[in-house]
Image: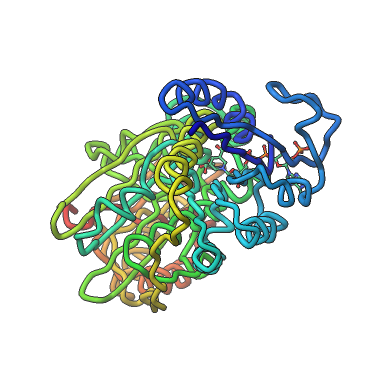
Length: 433
Ligand code: NAP
Ligand code: HSE
């Protein structure tokens, strides 16, 4: 018998607007296929007086209770953003027996296990495909398609805003601020864009991927994280001269039961597929014992790709969950995990310094690095970006432990001729150096 399936939405901003735009086409197609009708019942916003394309004012509310207490609403789409009140609203929806679809990576990274448990107890489900990688299907594949693998690594570009900014800075002469403004205008950035540019958004997403790929409970705030704000135009110039580009790379590796996880600007060989993932594209590369390596690439942010992921979850709920007698989605508790210390992690590094152009300075830097176990692989000296009698010095190192490089840098800073230590970035793919 034909059914009406009631949808409530929390939020009608960038992503919510994308969902509202795409919903009529999906509704018509679904109606043709099944005779069931998807109906948007209520939409929670802060300002009910703002004009909203595709909605009439009777659908808008600023009271969460109007969504939760409406018995017609079976599925709630949460696209409010931020931790609170979104997390509490999701809990209340699940406790009221509503299925939830969320795009909120902060809530899922911090409270995902608890929310899955609440959904389980209430015989409903929470789906979160849009929380990582925008339009790329990755949560579903990790939950289902890679289930037979022991996953050993996740290497990803999972923030569209920063990848857009870095690509613009790399290819055009455009300032960081202008590139960020463009990303905001295009609806890629978080409500507070510092979450994007400081790498926090990527850390939330990486924590979610770790919970699915490894079953580990990773605190996003314990992820070794560095944002993109210090990257300068000349870093791209030097990186290119050395055969690399710079990406905000999120990595998680499990090698011999040792687990490492980080979000950092990283030099990537220009010939590698990840180096060619530009603009708002994201990429997620999974390595497992059976699959070897699989890479997913696609638009990582923006209203339309995110609406695609949100509505895929809605369809999955409607097709495979709502019509059956309510049954809980299987979920397993996450395992606590100790993250490896910096003294265990090895990489080659890129260093940019500003030094006085005087006799002996290079030898002193090389000796100081060498005394701490760091040996130089290559060097570029340039006066182009420097002032007065100072020049810029760019070094790459052979493999070094992160703790070694950090302590060596403390001593390099004490050398009289060293005016400034600029950026220190790892170089991806140590085995090829
Ligand atoms: P946004 O443009 O700032 O929209 C937020 C919406 O939520 C607005 O409609 C706002 O109402 C409403 N809202 C916020 N706080 C509220 C409150 N306390 N009570 C009632 N309504 C409230 O944010 P967005 O870019 O759409 O992002 C939404 C979520 O999607 C975030 O979790 C984000 O991380 C996630 N996400 C975003 C993207 C992307 O490409 N942007 C991609 C994937 C996931 P008003 O309109 O009245 O202000
Ligand atoms: N602000 C996020 C990004 C949205 O730029 O990747 C997608 O999650």
